[in-house]
Image (tube, rainbow, N blue to C red; front, side):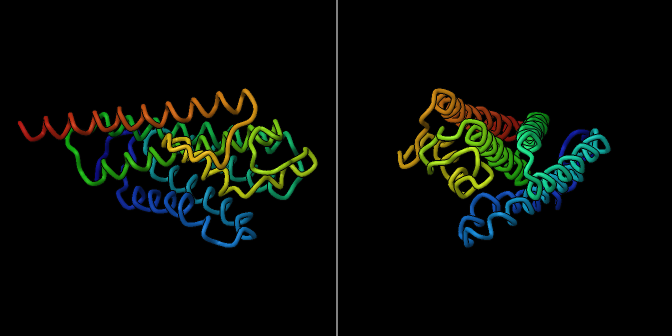
Length: 221
């Protein structure tokens, strides 16, 4: 067990977090769309809780923030409060980016490349995608018509296109694949698309360079 502060120090927690993120991103879209309304909040709740338990540094403070986030997340689902929904989305985004920062810091402070380090690298990549997916949803919520998912008015803003569509668009943009079936239509959506694409490439380049450097160093010691 690694006791380095600030890292995901409990191995099985890292594994559960990784598997839950994979399930959220890749497997939930296979389920009937009617189930998305409950599956995604449940998975986000699990991701928040597991990440908070896995953190060692500032665990108590992060746990308090996590419980507050989960509470307002579920309130926003059942209550029609537009401002609260926006607050939830922004908090989710910040929390995901915080987790990515902790994972990158852990990888940077690791002396050797292990299976866990590689898994944490993938987890960070997927978490970044989740953060941007949430940001895309937020943009659609605040500025309806920013994407060509479907026509949407403020009256049905809580009934966005299936969340899986936003995940699909974001990760396709994140990997710079860009099939063109879903596209940004407004200036803010286009700027966000550029940010997502550039960030995805930078993350891969930085993490791979970091892992290759650590692997080469460990071999020649």
